[in-house]
Length: 440
Image (cartoon, rainbow, N blue to C red; front, top):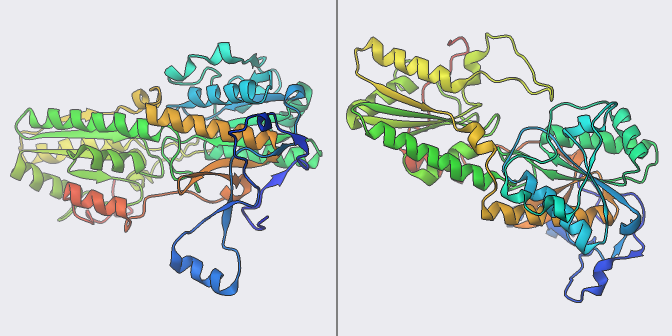
């Protein structure tokens, strides 16, 4: 077993025969099987030369032996943070895997996030195949969600009182931090609790996860919004379509929708700063485009250009996230004022599809991805793995310790393939103006 930041802990030695051993078609995964972090030969060569093992992830999958007796074990699922396509599909996948493949019939659904494990919380609801049979066709989460959480001590008190031994948190980076804190508290108490997280972030910005569930659905819906903006912009003389897309700190949805649609002329993301004023600034580039082609489409990730709001008092939500300034409305006002000041007959249509996208049901590709994540989460938990997230790396499901996520995030590389493809598709300048710190 590899050591270091990607070593996986367990609540104990897995000694029980798995119910899956009766299925001759099952191919069990050995704990020694791993996926390297960086597969490039240039990165592997130094390790090969020294006969050392490079950084790698434990491969997910069914184990030949398990730790928990499924028929005597209570599992619980909790959904936290913002909504995302596919949450219900993951809930369903976990329940169906526990029930039919392992024979675990004691499954709880925690209500309204980690708050459902606090004092005075709603009683968890029982989950079974009948309850979850059709929920994957609906957006949202049947368990409800929330931001923020009680203290780890209070949560573990509830877990002990409810006799939960398998906990499946579904959420983003805040949920992962919470799961790590719960894991550490349970470990301090020597509580045999398997905590296996399923990463949920519509922005696709969790480290060590190439693709999170709901992302493809979100890109598809965002692409339709860009198409609609293009239709509006080309339907009038001198039209501009402006679309604001989700993406607090990473612009993956905006960038992918821009490339996929082929209709956007400018894409703004948090990873690539831009300026408004002066030659080569956004307003200048936009005006030249509209005068030459009589229309333009702009896609902006919600986290783009947040330095324009630095003069405002920062407020945070219950999860500790900074509440963003509304870059969509900001751009709408500044673009309108710019063209009006030049007596230019502009028509601007502003589209913000964020909540329509967040609440959409998962598309078929995401449904399949949700099922794989759920199944591997159950395999890991019953084998006694704990303090981990199910990752997705080089097309393989992996076990990623939640402690390894501290301080890590995934963002667009401005010199990477995606951004270079976008520049070629849109024709926008690689640099749009200079973002002055005092510009308002």
